Amino acid sequence: MNSNNDHNLHRGQGHKKDDAHSHLPSDPELRVKAIETLLLSKGLIDSKTLDELIDTYENRIGPQNGAKVIAKAWVDENYKKRLLDDATSAIRELSYQGRQGENMVVVENTADIHNVVVCTLCSCYPWPVLGIPPTWYKSDEYRSRTVREPRKVLSEFGLNIDPKTEIKVWDSTAELRYLVLPVRPDGTENMNEEQLAELVTRNSMIGTGLPENSK
Amino acid sequence: MSRLHDMGGRYGDGPIPVPRNKNNQVENSEPTFKHEWHAKAWAITLAAGALGEWNLDVSRHYRECLPPKDYMNYSYYEKWLAGLTNLLVDKKLVTIEELKKFISLVQEDTSNKDLNENVKLDKRTWLAKDVQKTLGWGGPSLRKTDITPLHKIGDNVITLKYNPNENVIGGHTRLPSYAMGCEGKIFSYNGTHVFPDKNAHGIGENPLPLYTVEFKASELWGLAAENGKDKIYLDLWEPYLKIKA
Image (cartoon, rainbow over all chains, first blue to last red; front, side, top):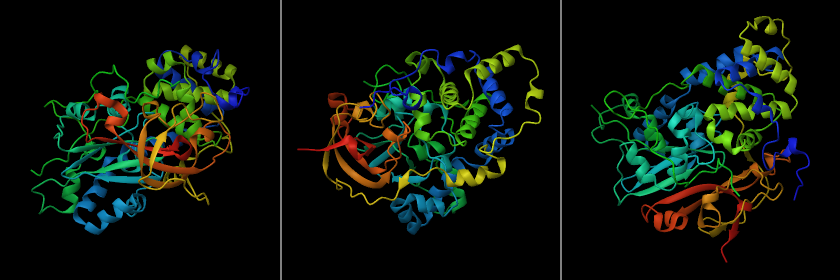
């Protein structure tokens, strides 16, 4: 066993006395401002990079990407097969790839199986197809309860799962990122891919919701 | 033996904070970032990470190493900021004196514009023109090795009973405590991936076989399981698993 002499390297057991973070001001806005100003003044970050990052995830990468993947799988049986066999490659066909989605897994809902995704240890989430996780996904309540009482948790989202349906909970403990392929809603036989994508909600791809019904 | 971040299965947490619209329907599209400072804290963390002084596992472990009282009191992005602050100082990108100086400056609420004029960017600094390229590549954890996985799909395995980190007492691990000492079945094999138990402590990537392991809800929760049909899947590295005798 390592003796943890080099605490800076290992941080084995925890924090240090008088740790840097304990000096931060109590107002989180000021905390960010202090760190941002300091890093800018040292040339370690560039404000244009921050703007580009925020703009990318506010406007370009989000659940609209995942919805296109799902709609394609609903209309194209071969694509669906590729998606379930090798999700990373199939999703890359639509040019969605990269950070926090380097290795994708798609799990399919059926009449007998309902899948739901959680990250109990942190907040792992498939960024290229769903963007940045919503607040509830990162909450202690969702992280602690979903593995133990998924049915109660889903009922709080208005989703009451039949006791005869099997629930599969996927706890993202490694760098694999999970996306749920929901069941295509009834009455959508005449809809095209684009119209179908409109029905795919973010929560239906996490497993805490269903796609919208056709109107 | 566990840390506060390892909260799967814990009792005591209340209803999920599900946002609802005016018609009481579940809201599927709240803003990406609720507050400007959330967006900033997130983006600064990514940009600082891109300097290359630490990896994803290290930054995760730094958040997990916050004192329990702070971990529980901080909101999500406050944890990110606190972890980042400790990393910046530990990795000597900033000094504690510089940090204190800038905290005083922003608290005095003076204009700090002149501080950031004519700044020469560090050669490691992530430039806006490279953002899309870097995001698109990401940071894959899959590594090609010639390691033969010990387990086959369908094998019964038992997870270790204690924190399995063999190198650092109390160190980082991705085996949640709720699934320790439990029997499961190998569901799939995912290739060899960077091993967080080592990578989080700067002692190499050591890619090892990663399996998805299926657990029955009744195995994890006993009589408290909601439904005997339900299953829980975790992605676990080979050292977390023993063959069931």
